[in-house]
Length: 318
Ligand SMILES: *[C@@H]1O[C@H](CO)[C@@H](O)[C@H](O)[C@H]1NC(C)=O
Image 1: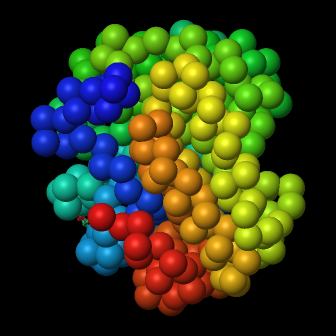
Image 2: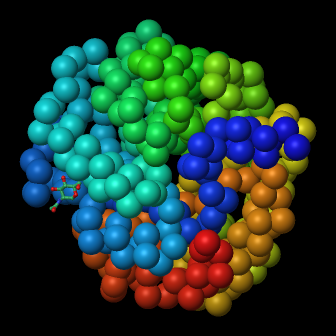
């Protein structure tokens, strides 16, 4: 069918494998200081952790970073040191044959202000994509979790990013677009239906939605609503993807280390697999060296998520 054809046609040996063993690898976005200091405010994900998780079957790593650390002004020059840290992480991941998702973790904001100039945003993305244009295993994620913005602006910013990326000559890569309301899957059909109008000359848009399973869907509690909440929260978004002929990915999900959450996560991943015509997989939030005792930490070997959840995720790894 049409959607499978999209992935197969784009394949050239690197089709976006439909696996649920994918994760974010935090570090470069840590801390609020701008520009901040490497090793104090923020850090790089560890190559050894990418390697361990890849050996466990993880085939895609989302790498959050801050736009303001890369360019002090949105139209400014790169901070070469920060760019180098980002490139190192990306190179290591793609050297493993895995996908590296570039995730400006900015919520549609720059220096705390909603990004209102689509021209500036397009120019920023063109410059960033130029650096990675030759790497087929890079995925561009336009921005993390737009929220409390005009829907028309969210759509325009996503389109500007797509156009900027393609104008840089980056033609082979997937582009993950995100919606308003923190790109939640459970509210997608209430707030983000206009996102269906996005266009890409290369036909490689993937709709990134986030879904947590706690009562307010924020991913701040170890308690999941019920053992079936995972599937329930993505049903309407699944129907939307099918009706509109789109492909989606769960770009963030997690659960506390307990039986209810494990069942809820398994139920969600089973449902994604049953609907693999429209879902490309799911990325756990999050690994990274500085998470410490964070309830969802997927950092090998002692992160709470890595210790508690790997046996649950293992069946979904390729
Ligand atoms: C991680 O791998 C990248 C890419 O191979 C390399 O440039 C970088 O130096 C490595 N980092 C460390 C700390 O070894």
